[in-house]
Amino acid sequence: MTSALRMFAALVPPAEAVEHLDAFLDVRRAAAPFRWTAADQVHVTLAFLAEVEEHRLDDLVERLGRAASRRTAFGTAVAGGGAFPSAARARVLWAGLDLDDPGRTELDRLATGCRAAANRAGIAVDGQRLRPHLTVARLGHPAEVSDWVRLLDGYAGPRWVADRVTLVASYLGEGPRGRPRHEVVDELPLGAAAPD
Image 1 (cartoon, rainbow, N blue to C red):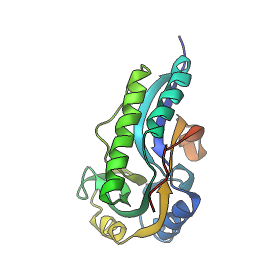
Image 2: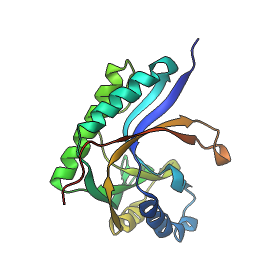
Image 3: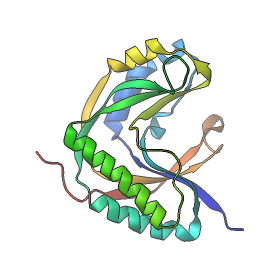
Image 4: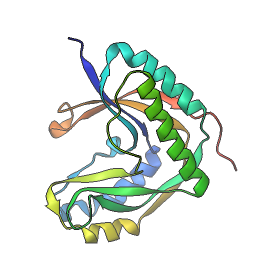
């Protein structure tokens, strides 16, 4: 039996954007017993790949690279937020992305391209259509989090350029406090620079 990797293709904000969000949340974390996402694991999942057989990895990287090269870099910022499935019975608290119409189109097409690349490499893609978000906390039990959603709604981080897809391997239980350990496998640049 061959081993399979748990992976995802993602947009990873630059350190300054993550640090800004982390500082905003840090002074508030003690107010809630959530499982807060570590700063080095903040990302926007474009395609979740629960089982990548190692012999398919090179093909996956090549196809993701082609998909990324067809897209244009775009400006964005971490801003706003919400909860899944709802603020009344939340299991996940998330921050959003501030996108103009061209940026939203590029992000949608990038996610579609990443999912198609994985499928063409013979890898099943989990999840549904892209709902761009960065998970900031998970809740052990459904809870009412309207105050947290309002707080995140008022958040706006620094602007940055999304210019690459990051392929990440996720090793469950190998990180601090039994959390996943993430390892960057490759970074695949988008094909064109963001317009001025």
